[in-house]
Image (cartoon, rainbow, N blue to C red; front, side, top):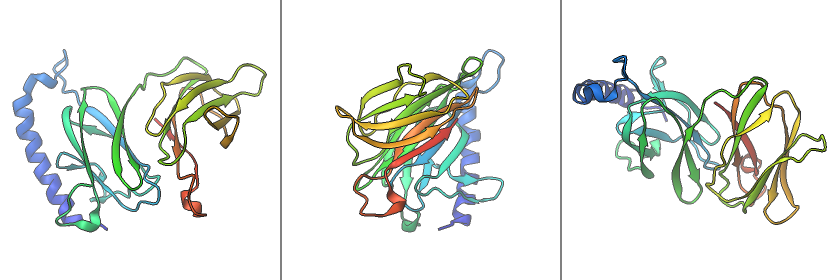
Length: 246
């Protein structure tokens, strides 16, 4: 559901608020060169089967395309690119646009954005919706390397072990016992290798999902666990994976 008029008015109000707030914050957001520092944030909708949701940082609609003048699609598996965000404490609100003009947030979470840093928001859950966030380490890996981490976002999946196997006989990269909403640290892997990635039920050899993955040099990846184990045969909700490239 597109809300062109509402979004444009909201952006005008935001611009006015930003000017006023900037005047108040003054030098607290400036670096040593007197350049204003902002944060950057992106978002992923990981709620299985969900249709359009809107994301707000305070009164600023994150899924709004300024160049197009309209809302951006943000349904299940959709991602938003990194966008500038004022730092310090921001209230993240998730809203169902079907409920406009009197929509109440489905969930709200206060996130502290540090100037100059990058963040990802994850809208997760199924019956109950939550907002998670991570700080994203976007420092480039060494030459010939890539960075990878995992985040468990399947609401009904058990604890999982993540295995990245190069098939060379060497010990695979493995991270054990991650439950819903857990995120791993970034790990360094060699690029240009065709790895096999396995999602394994913790404390078993039961591989619940497997896929091939060939990271490219210099790139940074978040592999997320998606869907439902109990999906009643709905292919759109199949348990599996998605990949965010930062």
